[in-house]
Length: 310
Length: 270
Ligand code: SF4
Ligand code: SF4
Image (cartoon, rainbow over all chains, first blue to last red; front, side, top):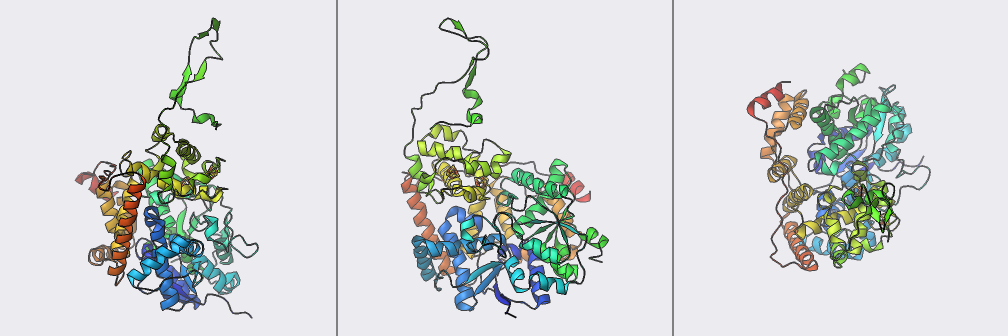
């Protein structure tokens, strides 16, 4: 048997997982521990630059992301860094692409790294992967199936991937490579993993639609409208749950579900859970250890009814 | 280049006559609607180069007006006036006054990158939207948009400390845009959060005032970043022909009613 990939990776949680996305952080770590996968937090990491720094200067965002990769590769000696946040994942990928293809970006990063007193990251030193890649490659559907203790059978799930996991295409050269690879138009890694855990995956047309996360606070009405589209489409598909794989999408869905109810009187039924929480439940982990109680969206009544929580 | 999209003819540019006689022929009815004749005399031929000099706008000249960006656009589906293809056309043809009619909505791009995914010419329209809204603010056509204020607060924290602290970010953003921190829907959210974790929540809130996330040994990175930012800002002002000491635009305000004490208690109760 060939050795499975990503048994040991550098872990880059990012700012959101230390704040509003802490239950994603908790459930990712709990999964790693339960599955015997080693994740080693990047030492003294900094913010990847997010969309906000990119808006001010894309090359500064490239520098910030490159510092994280430099630490993972040069100081910690890893060949893969795993980021569960779509924003972090996207930004590290974008920095990787820019450093491989753009001389000016290389110069800016080199000059800033020298002044800041750390090694300059060079394209190719480390591979950036998402938490979905990590679980898909290290454990895979078969591994999940073998380990399921509480099947998610009967739970109808709409998988929501958002924007940053697949767009723009050019920063994800490994996607759209045929069977086995991830698709940028019809992503399926989360579908595959949750289906292996027994869930019924609904055919959700808005997998890669936008939740308006960039404007969660700066233009709340637009975000509320976009989130309502997502929630209502999931309802129309008969989904009990929307599974997420990004802290910004997740908290956007939670916040604007509440806001739609409060400001516009529109109530929607799906509950929102991180895919890592759902996988953890299937593996028989305690909901508390997966941060289910910390979500704003209250999924406990549903999980109790389905025998997935006490 | 003709504009094919009918909805792009603004209502105020359509002239409809109840009764119209032209050269002695009565054309009332079917033939009485015209597009107002306009002579554009205020071309700003520098506009394209200026926007191309700002981050994100670099590749605007590649656009061949296919319209895929507008077709795929998330915000266009909500507001048909949000039209990246049209704005790129106006910028490239120097139609400044026409562009300025939409100046207050260009910042509303949600950066979903559907346009960039669809664009056959690698224009990166999402970047063009950002460059255009920066241009509008730098030129004094608009105040700083709520998005720009958020970006500044966020980036300011990252530059200073290497990490962000969400609660501080939200407080500062609300203060600068003239909004109350205590809003009905935010309260409902807090209520849901404390449903299962009253104690932890309180500890969390207390900790956030004591514990400020930061990367260690960040001082040299901070200095290098600040130096780079100042250089860039000066370069942008120069590219736009602005004096080095051009005043900053004011912050856009989004006033919302404050909840008074009674409303606050009521909101917490139900
Ligand atoms: S990134 Fe902006 S302009 Fe492009 S499709 Fe999304 S909302 Fe529209
Ligand atoms: S998709 Fe690209 S080429 Fe087509 S109109 Fe938009 S920016 Fe221009």
